[in-house]
Length: 505
Image (cartoon, rainbow, N blue to C red; front, side, top):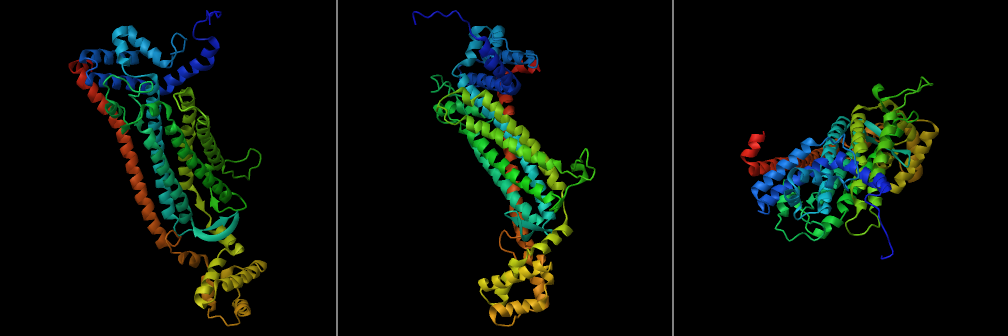
């Protein structure tokens, strides 16, 4: 080191341009409000712990309020005079109060615990709003599923017509997915909902801080236990964005199914005119473009989640910039595109109409009810399902060759096929054959738990509704926790400020 000369002064101009200025902009645009609340809460806690006198606390709180009021964030530009937004506010407070008093605010804390606390507070706010939108989507799905519980549609497997079900039953499957997504996000928030304040740089502090009180003042259920983990564990980020990514994948698959069902060749769903765009050159086109936008939003949102999760890969288990402002802001894009996706999806689900005539045509052409014909033969005739399946398979081949719906299958031809496979005459009459081959019968007998028969599906709807109510109550409680902390903090400030605050009002 003795041969090295260094006359440079921080910050390096390129470093300023590429790192410090963008981070400063991100902090002032996204995290300034949370930074202010952390400062106020810390001042309150220091007074309550008698680390600051009440007069010192009042002066610091008034100074912080004056700094916030004087800040024009939109006009504030990074100059390089200070390292970041934290030091900018710290510097402004020192100008108002002097270095001795202003410097007391930073007792027992670090930018490390401040930053992760701020990031968590913002993620909690974003998640509370997204959960509210998810609850609204669930309500829309519940209504549409109830309305469509008797509307027969054609279910597909491997891209091919498979069996009849109902629009309500189909939506119920997606509804369950969304409710599990809500549960995953809520569970992931348990890790976000842990305050890092009091960890200081790494190992807490010798000052008699009250970590639990800081958690309460800032809207957290608890403080995160291990102080090293407070500044090094980033599973609050990876856990939440993993849960979000799963949701966006689930939604994307459902949206892709909507694309197939609204396509011209399938045409099972009709998209209203106000959600259809026309071609600039082909006047006959009805393009359900909102579906494409939803598919794009789902993919983009999942990609934004991946940005966060993948950035955390192979990073050291310590405090690091990889998990801080820049990647946090990148992740927020998932909430932006995700919220737009949820709003549009709710609108589309509530608006699309089922083309029952078109579905009935495809149902007949595809012999979609043949499984129940085989099942009924086994039950009524007492033959093995293997035998019944062979008879049904021959019936399907004939029906497809003659383009004849199964519920109109020639009874004499059925009788001959039955005798060919069993050597016996059938006990089924023409009316029963038509009945067991009908879509309505197919659905009605599927009354096991989770099936599409109306009684079974109504029981499922009761469970979905109970879950929706429970999840909605959880979200309301989460909101109340967040909003209530502002009231708790305001009351604590008032208790310290006394007549001074009353006078300021």
